[in-house]
Figure: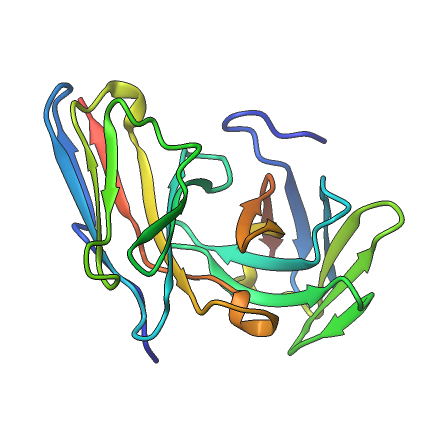
Length: 111
Length: 116
Protein backbone atom coordinates (compact mmCIF):
# COMPACT_ATOMS: atom_id res chain seq x y z
CA UNK A 1 0.00 0.00 0.00
CA UNK A 2 0.93 3.67 0.16
CA UNK A 3 3.76 4.71 2.39
CA UNK A 4 3.44 7.74 4.59
CA UNK A 5 6.37 9.14 6.49
CA UNK A 6 8.37 6.31 8.05
CA UNK A 7 6.12 3.52 6.83
CA UNK A 8 7.75 2.22 3.67
CA UNK A 9 6.01 -0.61 1.84
CA UNK A 10 7.95 -3.79 2.51
CA UNK A 11 8.37 -6.79 0.27
CA UNK A 12 9.62 -9.97 1.91
CA UNK A 13 11.07 -12.58 -0.44
CA UNK A 14 12.66 -15.97 0.15
CA UNK A 15 16.31 -16.11 -0.80
CA UNK A 16 16.58 -17.58 -4.29
CA UNK A 17 13.10 -16.52 -5.36
CA UNK A 18 12.37 -13.73 -7.82
CA UNK A 19 11.39 -10.27 -6.53
CA UNK A 20 9.02 -7.88 -8.25
CA UNK A 21 8.91 -4.27 -7.08
CA UNK A 22 6.25 -2.00 -8.51
CA UNK A 23 6.03 1.74 -9.03
CA UNK A 24 3.36 4.08 -10.39
CA UNK A 25 4.61 7.28 -12.00
CA UNK A 26 2.72 10.51 -12.34
CA UNK A 27 3.63 12.31 -15.55
CA UNK A 28 2.63 10.82 -18.91
CA UNK A 29 5.20 13.14 -20.54
CA UNK A 30 8.12 11.58 -18.67
CA UNK A 31 10.44 9.89 -21.13
CA UNK A 32 13.13 8.35 -18.98
CA UNK A 33 12.87 6.13 -15.91
CA UNK A 34 15.46 4.83 -13.50
CA UNK A 35 15.59 2.33 -10.67
CA UNK A 36 17.88 3.01 -7.71
CA UNK A 37 18.94 0.82 -4.81
CA UNK A 38 19.72 2.43 -1.46
CA UNK A 39 21.42 0.57 1.35
CA UNK A 40 21.28 1.88 4.89
CA UNK A 41 23.43 4.98 5.38
CA UNK A 42 24.43 5.22 1.73
CA UNK A 43 23.39 7.25 -1.28
CA UNK A 44 21.15 5.74 -3.97
CA UNK A 45 22.95 3.49 -6.46
CA UNK A 46 21.89 3.21 -10.11
CA UNK A 47 20.52 -0.21 -11.08
CA UNK A 48 18.88 0.06 -14.48
CA UNK A 49 17.10 2.58 -16.67
CA UNK A 50 14.64 2.57 -19.53
CA UNK A 51 13.46 5.11 -22.07
CA UNK A 52 9.80 5.54 -22.93
CA UNK A 53 10.24 4.10 -26.43
CA UNK A 54 10.93 0.71 -24.85
CA UNK A 55 8.75 -1.56 -22.73
CA UNK A 56 11.41 -3.90 -21.39
CA UNK A 57 15.10 -3.79 -20.64
CA UNK A 58 17.29 -6.43 -19.09
CA UNK A 59 20.45 -6.19 -17.08
CA UNK A 60 22.37 -8.63 -14.98
CA UNK A 61 19.71 -10.39 -12.85
CA UNK A 62 17.41 -7.37 -13.21
CA UNK A 63 14.66 -6.53 -15.67
CA UNK A 64 12.65 -3.33 -15.88
CA UNK A 65 9.19 -3.32 -17.44
CA UNK A 66 7.40 -0.17 -18.50
CA UNK A 67 3.66 0.05 -19.14
CA UNK A 68 2.93 3.54 -20.42
CA UNK A 69 -0.79 2.89 -20.74
CA UNK A 70 -1.23 2.63 -16.99
CA UNK A 71 1.91 4.59 -16.08
CA UNK A 72 3.46 1.64 -14.28
CA UNK A 73 7.04 0.57 -13.86
CA UNK A 74 8.34 -2.64 -12.32
CA UNK A 75 11.72 -4.01 -11.33
CA UNK A 76 12.27 -7.74 -11.37
CA UNK A 77 15.23 -9.24 -9.55
CA UNK A 78 16.03 -12.85 -10.39
CA UNK A 79 17.32 -15.29 -7.78
CA UNK A 80 17.21 -12.78 -4.94
CA UNK A 81 20.30 -12.75 -2.73
CA UNK A 82 20.90 -11.38 0.79
CA UNK A 83 22.89 -8.52 -0.74
CA UNK A 84 19.75 -7.36 -2.50
CA UNK A 85 18.29 -6.21 0.83
CA UNK A 86 17.78 -2.47 0.47
CA UNK A 87 15.22 0.21 -0.29
CA UNK A 88 14.40 0.49 -3.99
CA UNK A 89 13.24 3.75 -5.59
CA UNK A 90 11.89 4.43 -9.02
CA UNK A 91 12.59 7.84 -10.53
CA UNK A 92 11.31 9.67 -13.59
CA UNK A 93 12.73 12.44 -15.71
CA UNK A 94 9.86 14.92 -15.84
CA UNK A 95 11.46 17.79 -17.69
CA UNK A 96 14.77 19.57 -18.15
CA UNK A 97 16.67 16.61 -16.66
CA UNK A 98 14.74 17.05 -13.41
CA UNK A 99 14.79 13.60 -11.81
CA UNK A 100 11.93 13.06 -9.37
CA UNK A 101 11.91 10.09 -7.00
CA UNK A 102 8.89 8.05 -6.02
CA UNK A 103 8.17 6.44 -2.69
CA UNK A 104 10.53 3.58 -1.95
CA UNK A 105 9.95 -0.10 -1.27
CA UNK A 106 12.00 -1.97 1.28
CA UNK A 107 13.09 -5.42 0.09
CA UNK A 108 13.63 -7.90 2.92
CA UNK A 109 15.25 -11.24 2.15
CA UNK A 110 14.15 -14.25 4.15
CA UNK A 111 16.75 -16.97 4.78
CA UNK B 1 35.56 4.27 -10.70
CA UNK B 2 34.94 8.00 -10.27
CA UNK B 3 32.66 9.00 -7.42
CA UNK B 4 30.80 12.01 -6.14
CA UNK B 5 32.56 13.23 -3.01
CA UNK B 6 30.65 14.78 -0.11
CA UNK B 7 31.74 16.11 3.25
CA UNK B 8 31.24 16.00 6.11
CA UNK B 9 29.76 12.52 6.40
CA UNK B 10 27.92 13.45 9.61
CA UNK B 11 27.06 16.80 11.13
CA UNK B 12 25.46 17.52 14.49
CA UNK B 13 24.47 21.07 15.23
CA UNK B 14 22.20 23.04 17.49
CA UNK B 15 19.20 24.88 16.15
CA UNK B 16 19.87 28.46 15.01
CA UNK B 17 23.45 27.58 14.07
CA UNK B 18 24.81 27.68 10.52
CA UNK B 19 25.87 24.54 8.67
CA UNK B 20 27.50 23.96 5.31
CA UNK B 21 27.87 20.89 3.13
CA UNK B 22 30.36 20.40 0.32
CA UNK B 23 30.11 18.34 -2.86
CA UNK B 24 32.62 17.55 -5.60
CA UNK B 25 30.90 15.93 -8.60
CA UNK B 26 32.41 13.44 -11.00
CA UNK B 27 34.85 15.17 -13.32
CA UNK B 28 33.16 16.33 -16.49
CA UNK B 29 29.64 16.23 -15.08
CA UNK B 30 28.07 19.60 -15.83
CA UNK B 31 24.83 18.99 -13.96
CA UNK B 32 24.83 18.93 -10.17
CA UNK B 33 21.91 18.30 -7.85
CA UNK B 34 21.27 18.68 -4.14
CA UNK B 35 18.60 16.43 -2.67
CA UNK B 36 17.21 16.17 0.85
CA UNK B 37 16.07 12.79 2.11
CA UNK B 38 14.00 12.47 5.25
CA UNK B 39 14.12 9.06 6.90
CA UNK B 40 11.70 6.67 5.22
CA UNK B 41 11.08 8.85 2.17
CA UNK B 42 12.52 9.29 -1.30
CA UNK B 43 15.06 12.02 -2.08
CA UNK B 44 13.50 15.44 -2.67
CA UNK B 45 15.17 17.80 -5.14
CA UNK B 46 16.32 21.07 -3.56
CA UNK B 47 18.40 22.66 -6.31
CA UNK B 48 19.81 21.80 -9.72
CA UNK B 49 22.82 23.44 -11.37
CA UNK B 50 23.92 23.40 -14.97
CA UNK B 51 27.59 24.43 -14.78
CA UNK B 52 27.54 27.47 -12.48
CA UNK B 53 23.92 28.43 -13.16
CA UNK B 54 20.90 27.47 -11.12
CA UNK B 55 18.41 25.62 -13.32
CA UNK B 56 15.81 24.88 -10.65
CA UNK B 57 15.61 25.98 -7.04
CA UNK B 58 11.84 26.03 -6.73
CA UNK B 59 11.89 23.64 -3.75
CA UNK B 60 14.75 25.35 -1.92
CA UNK B 61 13.61 27.20 1.25
CA UNK B 62 15.40 30.37 0.30
CA UNK B 63 14.83 32.13 3.60
CA UNK B 64 17.39 29.83 5.21
CA UNK B 65 18.99 27.70 2.48
CA UNK B 66 21.51 28.81 -0.12
CA UNK B 67 23.54 26.94 -2.70
CA UNK B 68 26.38 27.95 -4.94
CA UNK B 69 28.62 26.47 -7.57
CA UNK B 70 30.84 29.41 -8.34
CA UNK B 71 33.27 27.82 -10.80
CA UNK B 72 30.90 25.23 -12.15
CA UNK B 73 32.70 22.37 -10.43
CA UNK B 74 32.25 21.80 -6.68
CA UNK B 75 29.26 23.12 -4.77
CA UNK B 76 28.29 24.22 -1.28
CA UNK B 77 24.86 24.01 0.35
CA UNK B 78 24.32 26.20 3.42
CA UNK B 79 21.59 26.38 6.02
CA UNK B 80 21.35 29.40 8.29
CA UNK B 81 19.79 29.20 10.79
CA UNK B 82 19.26 25.45 11.12
CA UNK B 83 15.91 24.26 12.46
CA UNK B 84 14.93 20.96 14.05
CA UNK B 85 13.01 19.96 10.92
CA UNK B 86 16.16 20.20 8.82
CA UNK B 87 17.43 16.93 10.24
CA UNK B 88 17.84 14.68 7.20
CA UNK B 89 20.33 13.18 4.79
CA UNK B 90 21.59 15.72 2.25
CA UNK B 91 22.60 14.04 -0.97
CA UNK B 92 24.59 15.43 -3.85
CA UNK B 93 24.38 13.92 -7.32
CA UNK B 94 25.85 14.69 -10.72
CA UNK B 95 25.20 13.75 -14.31
CA UNK B 96 26.33 14.58 -17.81
CA UNK B 97 23.92 16.74 -19.78
CA UNK B 98 21.99 15.32 -22.68
CA UNK B 99 20.02 12.28 -23.64
CA UNK B 100 20.39 8.58 -23.24
CA UNK B 101 22.30 6.91 -20.48
CA UNK B 102 24.06 10.17 -19.67
CA UNK B 103 20.95 11.31 -17.85
CA UNK B 104 21.42 8.92 -14.97
CA UNK B 105 22.45 10.42 -11.67
CA UNK B 106 25.47 9.35 -9.66
CA UNK B 107 25.06 10.00 -5.95
CA UNK B 108 27.52 10.70 -3.19
CA UNK B 109 27.26 9.04 0.21
CA UNK B 110 25.49 12.05 1.66
CA UNK B 111 25.79 14.19 4.77
CA UNK B 112 23.60 13.09 7.67
CA UNK B 113 22.51 16.22 9.53
CA UNK B 114 21.12 16.12 13.04
CA UNK B 115 19.78 19.36 14.50
CA UNK B 116 19.41 19.33 18.29
